[in-house]
Image 1 (cartoon, rainbow, N blue to C red):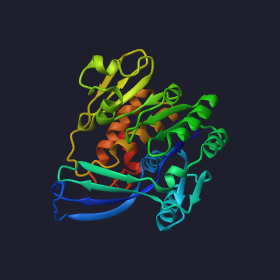
Image 2: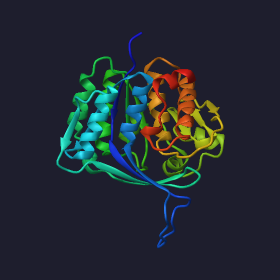
Image 3: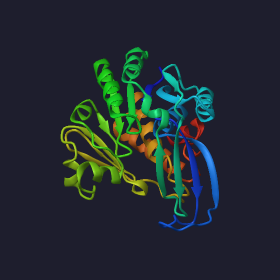
Image 4: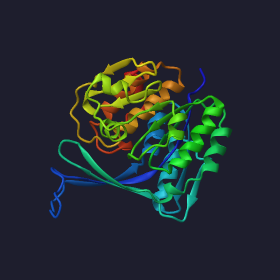
Amino acid sequence: MSKAVIAVVGSAMIDLTAYATVIPAPGQTLEGDLFTTGFGGKGANQAVIAAHCGAEVHFVGKLGRDLFGDSIAENFKKLGIDSEYIERSDTPNGVAHIWVDANGENRIIIIPGANHEIESKKAIEAIESIAGLAVVVAQCEIKQEVTLAAFSAAKKRGCVTILNPAPYQPLSKELLAVTDWIIPNETEFKELHGQAPTSDDVLKSFRPGKNSIVTLGSEGAVLITSDGNLTRVSAPKVNAVDTTGAGDAFVGVFAFGLASGKNPEDAMKLGIKVASMSVTRKGAQSSYPSQAEIETLS
């Protein structure tokens, strides 16, 4: 069987994470429990977990010409993620400042840096050139015009496109028209749709005629097909210590599932299992299960 071929057009960052019992209130100073640095960025996270699943992954992005960018490039090389379409910039690499509380819930501020310099023409070149490409994934940590260019090129090739609309920003009609799957969490769903995903009617009214998945944290996820059918899948009960990167794990695994020929429901189920395992460990990419662990979940 040929490998699932995926292109991720997106961000790569270094995560600077502080763990504390509670998140400080405005004007308050608290003593934390732990500080870590690690690999992150929604695009890179999704690429890495897809690679852990066994996919052939091509990353399209831009890294700073600095220590952070160098370390990300080396990590991609170690994981076998293709970097032909990664460029470097004198602008510092992107970073994410993350606070995690005792319940594993996080607050994140990103500084995009070089990620905002990805060029549309480079994205188009990549999508047009990658042999056997099946699925293209993007997020909102890069400029929307780049995602639109990549998805438009992908649709001309007959590829499936998946958009993770995070962090939230208004999405153009043009981008939505070339997006096969959109995967928001509960917060992003409410920002996009103006209502929380609390009922079947609200979910069905989100994108009539299009496919969507809404991730619901510890409650699992709900799949909304283009014909309006809903499928809810619950998440296994786990002791969450850090939810950072869990949504990205779901998206990357779902992309792998579709690219490898799974039906959407089975791809969603695997994504939920992997994401649930990731929240039992600290960090984003550092929390992701290995290929051997993922194979036990399939």
